[in-house]
Length: 285
Image 1 (cartoon, rainbow, N blue to C red):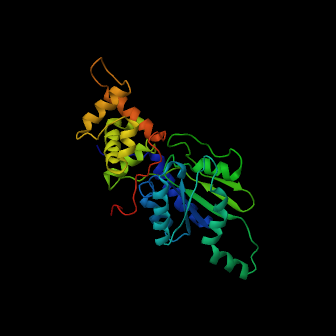
Image 2: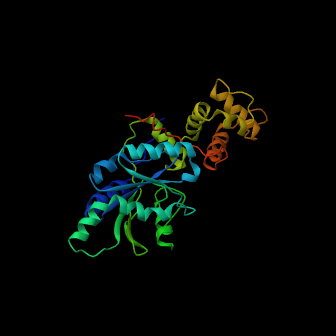
Image 3: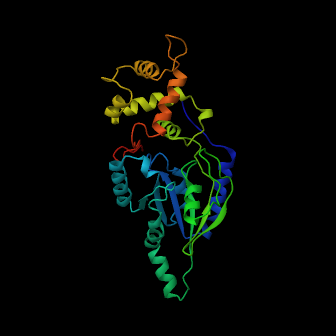
């Protein structure tokens, strides 16, 4: 199965982002800390060009801490400032303004030398659907201004929002890209909720998840589903989990759809611990 999802409002959002670039000082690129590359829209590099950027690794509380450390080192090596945050709980947000000033140091010094009075930093927040942009804005603004929702496609218009005296934020709709070059990218985005479940074959997504866990987190897979050893065939894993969780179509047959839902729900609900699905040592070209 190839997963693609590019609603019409996303094409419009891309045009609007391009038009508003000249109004902002810096881009806050929000990515999912569990998939820092798969949740980065490759079109963003093309759209924002040389505009200063701060990468925010959101949902860091759900990601493997050791892998987050590796990703911070990766971005530093690439010359990009990055911060781990949790917009839902508000952790790490107090460091954003300071980091933005560091990224804009040269520009702010030039403005000062010209006698230009300091003003609030104007930032545009960009990111794929359901990565937490509106939640982040509401936290920074300390009020519920931006619409939020645990599903992609909630924010469909742009709006300026004051975040204290130091920042003004421009929210944008989430933008996916027309075609995923790496098929795994679609599965990772689907697994973490960036793509609507209604358009997915959840069995395929669950199969991808099981194979990933078998390779990268086998102990957690065995512990969660009471497996003495790993099975050779994925259908045997489905049968085992389905019987264990009571996902039965009849007395003897496993309901694979319900079993897939259980697996995906467990991963999203952190029942298998904090997981990261991208590795900086294995980035698709």
